[in-house]
Image (cartoon, rainbow, N blue to C red; front, side):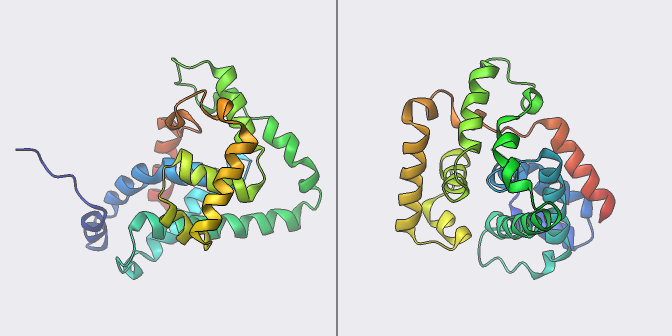
Length: 210
């Protein structure tokens, strides 16, 4: 008889009962999702990791307030999006010239983002990532949520506070801008991977702070 996978609600119950080490299970489960969605807002890799850590810290601090009215993943992602928007405001105030350098930052994605991708042509995959990163934010975030993270239209609508019709329109526009042939070069699951080393670093840093 197959053992049932432990649910988020069960993990949260154990954490609230005092077993904070279990929080690592949730972080490892959702690191990939948070990383990809954060990519829709922020370009700098160090900033992305910092935003993810702050998201997990705030989620942990408010875990007792999670009422299970929506999925934990949705609740966590809302915290991430809010954190991203706050970070953007902070960065824009600190560096008023940043908007003029965004395109340069987008095109300078480093080759070590996905060091373990042995079966894919790294250079061509980066072309796809750069094209996605270069989309206007309102289209990029919808594309990342729907096509890369495979979120439902309904959840994407809830997270972005947009109508379902608007989500569909933006997704279609994003696909047009990317061109279907380019977007289909690689399986979407291989795009913007969050590798194990970084996954471990996020989990360890957060656990040391809670």
